[in-house]
Image 1 (cartoon, rainbow, N blue to C red):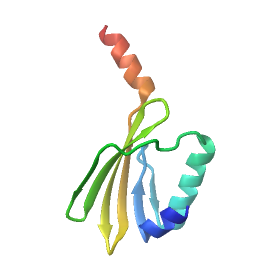
Image 2: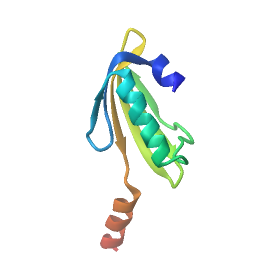
Image 3: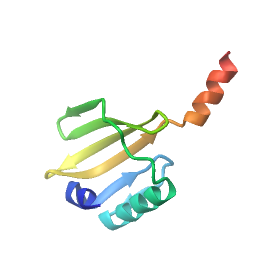
Length: 101
């Protein structure tokens, strides 16, 4: 949680995987704590792709079960001011792949 508070602006805007929005570091920390509690084993194993252009960054993260997430962030004054989170849903992907066979 120290990293979240260090890297995010006090009024950070975060849109999560489901389109839910938090505003401010306190709401973001609460969301992160709830996410960790719900899935304690879902740590990021690696960040194989990292891209930056101007004040924007994008990074992929690989989680257990070969789940992929993407974070797109807008930086201001050395901190994340906006963050958009996307996650591949392996259940949906597996159903789609089965339907195509």
